[in-house]
Image (tube, rainbow, N blue to C red; front, side, top):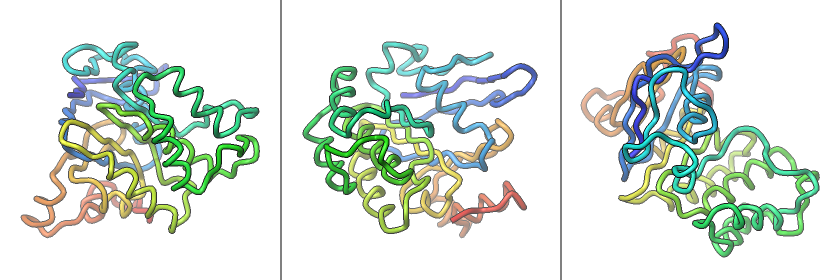
Length: 234
């Protein structure tokens, strides 16, 4: 459904992503793993159609990503992207106006689960509350692809359980879920496939269950093997 063909992205002389090839199939939850600065966010922005590759192509159902694919790909970035004057209700209305697949009823249910209210103002939200709002508004779309960049950043341990359940409820045979993170232990409980990115390149791709059963290696173990002293964060 979503394919990366030898994608390279350069910013001046800096190579952020290099010759990255990847195929994401429906029915799977993918973890895109790597330390901060490894190229995960840059690749996801290209897959979302927000920036263009320097070389190669990202395809959605065989066509280059762009304006049309944005109707089917729900992307949550790490950066805040709401106006400070907005309320949580305004955010839902804003998304409803832009995306035909957005359900305001689902949104209301999700913000309730995230312990947010429609009256809350963006300028008053903590970083953790903002993170939960971004997840809620993204998952309220009925998209074919969900891409969440660092969804657990700023989220306390207890709230992560609720968010994990909300994410998994959107897993389906006809959908792709892609979560990027450096919090490997969180991804272990969610993803069935793992893609490891190192210095902008794909270092490995594996089926998580097969890796456990055949090799006795966990996702965190494989992370340590690939990144060494770069570390695993819980």
